[in-house]
Length: 406
Image 1 (cartoon, rainbow, N blue to C red):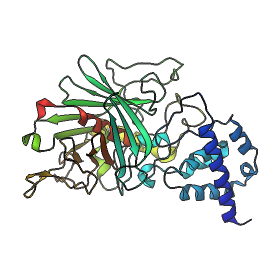
Image 2 (cartoon, helix red, strand yellow):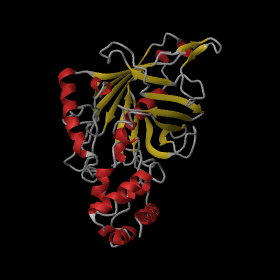
Image 3 (cartoon, rainbow, N blue to C red):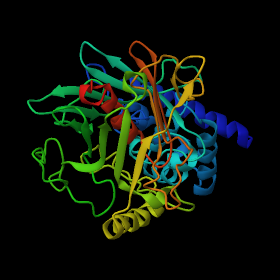
Image 4 (spheres, helix red, strand yellow):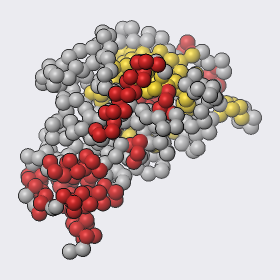
């Protein structure tokens, strides 16, 4: 049997297992976790068959080459779910997949749920879109499967708007069917002040090693039925967003100021690194999501980043890219490169502020772009050094009406 035939046969068997595993849970709500489908339960019949097959007995060197070829060939969703299925076959396969799959920063791919907490790609933006449901006040983030502005997409995150007496909160979850703080799928939230002009993004897990939990009103510890008692579940502030008075009125974009508390300004410099979460706490299923993916290099970077922020206090600051006046249209315009088709005060592009730049010059590279393409559909393109979770939370802040700023 040729090596190419081996690759095709392994991919065929893995594909069959992934399809059976993802469809064989009747009567149970399936968690669509981030950019990945959960791997089939190892106790399931499909996984048992795979463990007993000849492929689990391959020599390590050949197995690594086979899985590397599978990972390389399945570069985009929905076919990339076969890579996730490989991680659920057995312990040896899982360890090799852990070493092969790279972070979104290096690969440009969202593969596992933890990928949503890791910085985006450096070379090109990750193109996503947000769908709003006005009736239920929920928002759904998808990654586009094609270059078209609208397609079926791959579900990533969901958010639900909750009005409080003195503030508004957006709860963010990996589960589109159960957006609540009481579940394992809860990953963070966005909270506004009374006027809706200042927002804080909270991560449910430490953004880097040594981070300190916020002692705010909603800091909490969940019982063992939801989270491991060894893991404190609380609010780790990772970003502060403020909307300022718009001197252009409703004809111009809102003025935004985003202080990224967990990202040092050095991250955007040559050779700089951003904090990278390597695993979810033990509240997630031991069989998959607690795997310390990408652990080797990121832990050292996290510790050094935490020390840098503590000593220098130099945070990355993002602000609106300055619009230009269009004489023909008689309005202020930004070049969204065809990714935005409807004029809206919500549309924005964020770049690194001159406050973050040692040379006192505004960066031209757009880190986050958000704009309207339909009545309840918006595009969201983000890139290094922010993550999909951070980008989604910042975009959610744009949905509130801000009378004081317009």
